[in-house]
Image 1 (cartoon, one colour):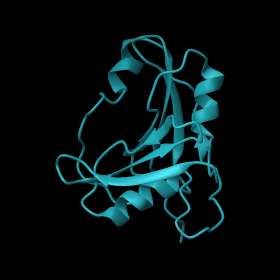
Image 2 (cartoon, helix red, strand yellow):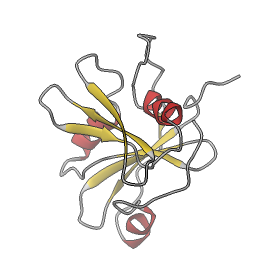
Image 3 (cartoon, one colour):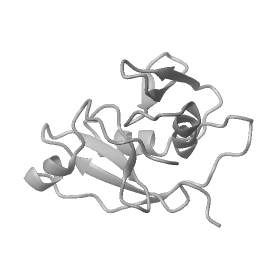
Length: 142
């Protein structure tokens, strides 16, 4: 049986501001991760996307205003380099989502990186598919 995230794909796209972003898509088509910010250079976006496990990063799990569990990942310089793209009913579900992004709850080895999808062309179609900031989706599993 495949582990959660093994069949995920990454998509790199240019947003309506002309900045590069990425999103991680589960095999069921749900977005399970996305860039926290836009990048001027595609290579910087891809470097963030491929960050994987990093022992120096700090992971925070918290409940938002709606009492839903979320996570955020901070680099050693304090900059947020990742965050949950949606809220979860259970902390464990937020942790499972964070594992897809490189979180290691018990020191287990990091999972293999997912495949990267070809970049989508810039323009209205790509911008229309981009998740809106602060958009709320239903709670997802793993």
